[in-house]
Image (cartoon, rainbow, N blue to C red; front, side, top):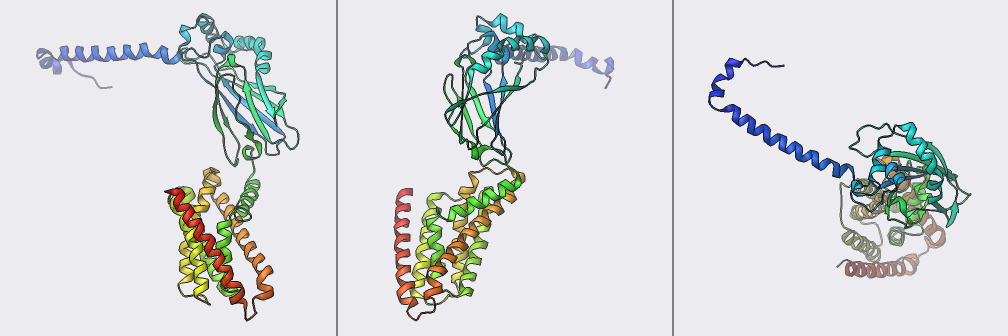
Length: 398
């Protein structure tokens, strides 16, 4: 602590410094008083309840962690009131807020059946039972701040349950719902108004998963993004295959394509590289046209073709990134999710090449008429489809 001798400040007193200090202090006290008068309005706002929904990885149990302004609900305060002090039940609300945890728990026991009766969970549209498994009554603390009470409920799910829906008594007010699942495919956030029902939640997308579950899941997602969903990517890979059934040209192009889309898949998912889909999608269609046209014009792999395929691979990677970004992979699992998704994409591409080889290459690849009857007609068809997609996507993005 610094000590100031009175004699040092004597000249300032004679110049009227105390008057300035008093004025400054008066302003500060006025601001403090203004803040204090504003605090009750904030503290007495009816707090919206929260519900955290979680599913176990096996899909056998579900849980709800309700975070309640319990005293307001017990007192019967109208959830539409902006300030609880304006409610006819304000005195009862304040009495409950001052209760220690043991007494509040006794009040809750009288309310338990009403809470369970007013909380409705539907599994595949059918009512499901709930049990309270945990109560956590907080100490009284600062009465200027609403006390929040966690209540955890749990229930079991029949095998194969697909959807979860939530609704509760309008007397409890509106509620915000968010899902909690370790390595879940996605999350859900919603505010359910009084008396309304939540959107149906798809359990498989929201349940907790292990790292192994996540890796297997993303491999499947990456694969299905090629087969059967990725028709534009399929045509691009078929165009790569048609140029030559020999292993070296195929591997050269596929390697260039793989390295490129792996780069932009990671950078795009992390948000370091962003191009609007109105640009990416037409250019992907243009890449299909280019590969098909070059198949028609050149009978062998050109020196520049691997570099062109690499550049187009960068575009395709940004297209993949748009899909992967929607899953919101947690930071600690990003690398595993990215690699497993990419493995799925590669397996899908290799499967396309294997199918082409089994259907065409193994039977006709060495025939003298292969290029005339297979490569050129097939490339013309691919170019026509790619050109149609390019025009359609440019027109759709305009």
